[in-house]
Image (tube, rainbow, N blue to C red; front, side, top):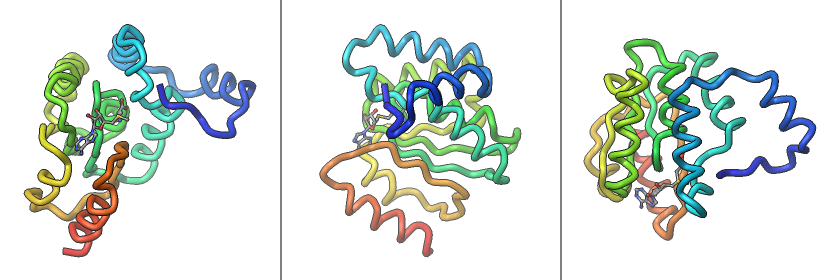
Length: 158
Ligand SMILES: C[S@@+](CC[C@H](N)C(=O)[O-])C[C@H]1O[C@@H](n2cnc3c(N)ncnc32)[C@H](O)[C@@H]1O
């Protein structure tokens, strides 16, 4: 599970106790990830999911590109904050975790907003023709990061 840098336990507890209540399917994703052992570290933290929700809700965001979906917590957190005509393109190369994410999106009745693409992100980014994303959330770290950022700059400058 992702950790919060420089946030004390006291502040973290305050955010959890007073922040946005999680949707039941967000809670399900978190408990599913808990059962995965060490790999659960991949998931964003609860306060990060609340923060993503807040940004989308308050910034008139309608179209999002996500790179790194895992089992879906970040995509679902943003999707729940989007208006009905909002849209997320969610990229991840892992078929197995993607299938799990898709089931959670369906369960939360958000699949009409989230299009997943299962491929290495560099390939997906070469194929994506759209360039009007209001928000790009990158949650991957890999050797091709510089190339990935260059592709994103190209998408945004088309
Ligand atoms: C840190 S996890 C994402 C966590 C997710 N945002 C969440 O809220 O649970 C990183 C994800 O990026 C994916 N990934 C890593 N390298 C990738 C690449 N080159 N192309 C596409 N996906 C990649 C992994 O399969 C993994 O699911």
